[in-house]
Length: 218
Image (cartoon, rainbow, N blue to C red; front, side):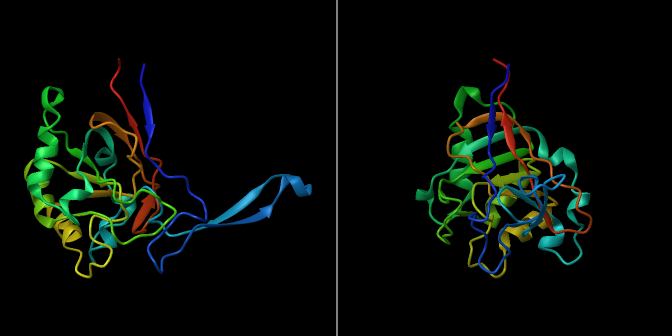
């Protein structure tokens, strides 16, 4: 009845993270193949791994941890739009609005969750700083349109070399939620149900998610 799109990259030690952040590693404490009763693993990693949600505490000193993120922000109707890398390093309001308008007759009222496919971070195992980010003006435009959750197929809504993080600041100003690191290459633009729930990590500044899109019933 439904088609599922898994929009999370596989998580292993080869997955790229921001330079200086902690890559995923696994320590096997016991192993069935060694004759142990169970296989038991310890995982060490940044919480900003693959598809992940940023908590406000990641970019504001007084922001709450990820356990306080409203789950409804990451569960429900969403719209996926394609805004190509040809727009430059920052997505501005006009091309974003044009991409939303290009859905034509399929367009329904804009959901409160919008995902943006830039195609500018094609290989999650190869780090590059040349990915497309979102301008703070575009965040302001989305907020004015009633959007509370913005997702993107890059490691950050801000450029990799940004020191002031103006898009994050705009998100904080509007009380929005950020979903980053999505894999959207093979997903057509359109309307879906988003399911991307974070772990209930008390006090943490983010959480990986298993993000999926579910298409409407045929």
